[in-house]
Amino acid sequence: MTNQRKTICITGASSGLGAALAEIYARGKARLVLTGRDAERLQTVAKRCEQLGAEVHTSVLDVRARDLTQQYLTQMDHRYPFDILIANAGISGGMGGIDEKDIMAQGYEVFETNLTGVLHTIDPIIPRMIARGRGHAVLMSSLVSYSPWPGAPAYAASKAAVRFYGEALAQTLKPHGVNVSVICPGFVRTPMTDRNPYRMPLLMDTEKAARLMKAGLDKKKRLIVYPFLTAFIAQLMGMIHSSVMTHFLAKTPQKPALPDQL
Image (cartoon, rainbow, N blue to C red; front, side, top):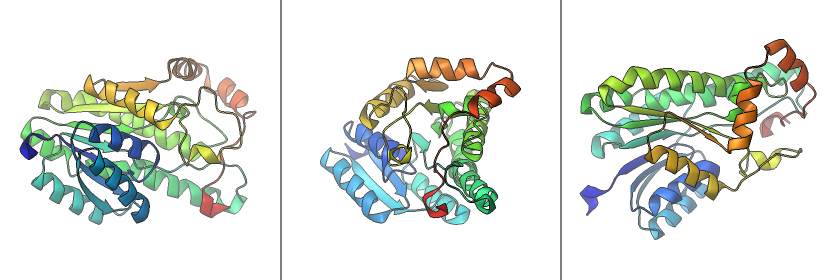
């Protein structure tokens, strides 16, 4: 029975979408390799997944730490070849309440996690998937990737880079039997969005969002965007001339700065 389990690796699994995805896959009795920065929350998620029937392996990791991240993921992939690798770890920070001197520092921190952290995650595993001739790499982007949001420049740009990179990578790896999916969620109720002091249209709970993500991944969709109406509006905004869209977006609320920047 154990050898028949699918192995799913999820970074940023200690809360939010990562935790919800872990529980969804746990119901299918998967083998889960979960990482996160908060040890206590990660163990809470692991226990819930074990109760649902999953085999769970955990490690406290910060995806910005390249050597540690790649060493652990390579070891686990050698032991249990990953069927799906979900590079989900990410942070959210904008211009709301931030001191001007911290603008660039926050930008570095957001990019190091949301973009460089994704590269640290997939870099050691994709060559192994290519060698096996199978596998599924999943990159977490956002609907904000379709527009240049002045209230969250680093966050929007990092997610746009992830989306473009993932969509291009999908075409590159397809001949090798490796699938790549990019997920672009709208507003989902997570600890990150709980900090937003403004109304979030079509806000959905994490379990529903996770079900939509898994449904798209089961079909190996290259691009998974939801909810439909928010996705349609975001993509439409992305087609408007940048000078017009930037002027319009400048009037929208600012995303709060990273917690340690306040």
